[in-house]
Length: 180
Length: 243
Image (cartoon, rainbow over all chains, first blue to last red; front, side, top):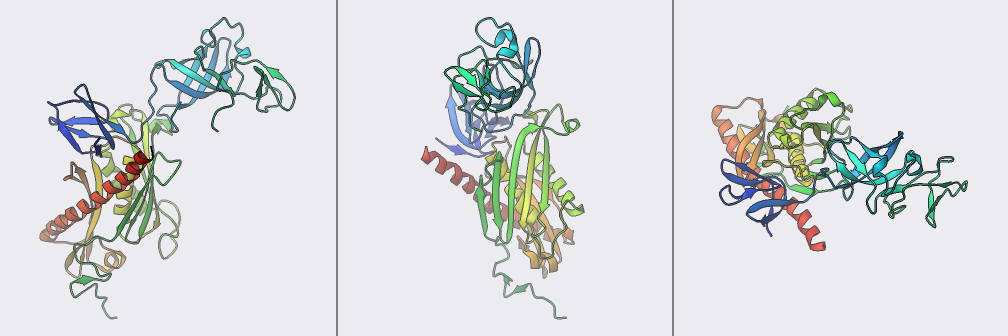
């Protein structure tokens, strides 16, 4: 496959439709990023050397709980999963109590705690609604509400290693496996 | 005082011909935490460029709802010149930052990223005339490394008038004691020079000298462009082979 750089001519607008990483000017197609040329269904695009994260519906994001309301948990979104690159717009996301876990949840503070790191799926991009209902989503790092020590997962229970306090969370199977 | 001869027997002080560039070394992706980076040596110039973004704009009022803003910082390290330079931006570096930013703004596709910022930082570790051109070349490669969509690649080179002769890519002695110097930046697309993105001049040149200088600069820019391409290729080709 051909490797191109920004400005390299790829063909004419009559030949292909311009896909990602390609732009059209005066009927000609040029690459806008460096990468490999991909042609599929008459659409020509360039698979870039480095991608810029963009949040779409269904994406998994990682963030920190910064506030707990009656029926909402507010999340400061840090990264899109799989990217080690800052997001273009780092807004707040919200997890509604109905989107926390598959079943009914009475009190949101039994699923999340302040400063927890969560893995969540994007349900609505416009309003940045998140959900941890899905498989694999939930808290991946939590701290003890009493002594702020990192909680450890022991037989499906989150235990504080210094004071022995046991806390309840919507725990993700990825708990403690994050890269810090 | 005896006058310094900058040209002897058709050769320059460092043995180069009139149309020869200084040796160039380009390394891509040298900074781990930057989205894109480049280290470049152009003769005795040593510069490091880092690109971040598109990312959130701070302070917020600078954000443009229709496109991304580009910020460029040209900064000389205090130890980059013979006499210690006072740290921080001064009149000269603010001006260079402005014109260089405007050169890159013409090729970066800012409309694709509204309300965000592309930050470019270029640090001069060692200076030896034509540092703004070295910085632009490094910044341009760093932008490609960051995967930021661009219409082409910016390549920059300077020409100077030394002892009445137009020479390519002046070094410090020629810059200091020459009659004039003129940095250029070109937008290169599809292997051809498309437009001039930056042009400055210090000193006086005749109309014919400017024309001659432009031709010389174009030739030099094409050589640098090939080196820029090779540097990017080298980085990503080896990565592919590792996979």
